[in-house]
Amino acid sequence: MKKENKSKKVAVESQREEFYQMFLDELRDIYCAEEMIIENMPKMIEAASSKELKDAFKKHLSETKEQHKRLDQVFEELGEVAEGESCKGIEGILKECDSIIKSSNPSLVEDAELICAAQKIEHYEIASYGSLRTFARHLNLSDIEDILQEILDEEGKTNKDLTALAEGSWLSTGINAKAANK
Image (tube, rainbow, N blue to C red; front, side, top):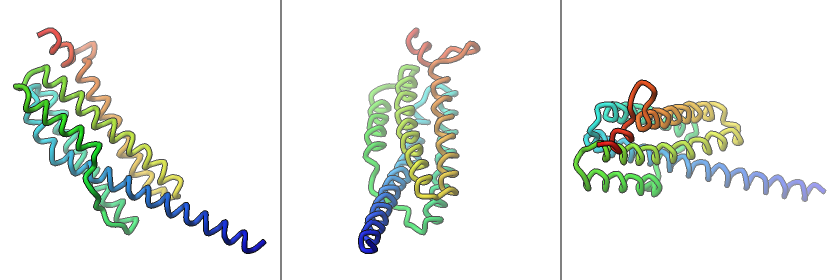
């Protein structure tokens, strides 16, 4: 009976280690994604024709830099190295952004396209941080879970802000409506 319990314990520990490694891989993926966003966001700021969109992108860049610092803190708390390979998901979306920027002159239509691409980035980040937060919870990493929840909340707010910019409100016409009617 003792031998059976010991092998179960080893299997559970092995599975937990595998889960932890998956958590680290995903954490490194979003860390790399944030680096790529920081590197590419200035091009999106430059390409935007609307002051409101430029301001939204500048705010997102500033938040992303802060989030990146918090991810450094997470890796430090884990005693792990914050490095990873290129984030293929964000890489594809950023290539799409480059195509938008290269294919047209600054205009409201391009702004609408840039908002769409920026929201794809946000949705990637929301999915990543939501999963990472849950993984941290199951690994009993409550301080890290709190940090990831804070970042997730910021990403959700940025996505809502971009939607409001695109759609407008009862006080303002959105970029999409302006682009469609010009």
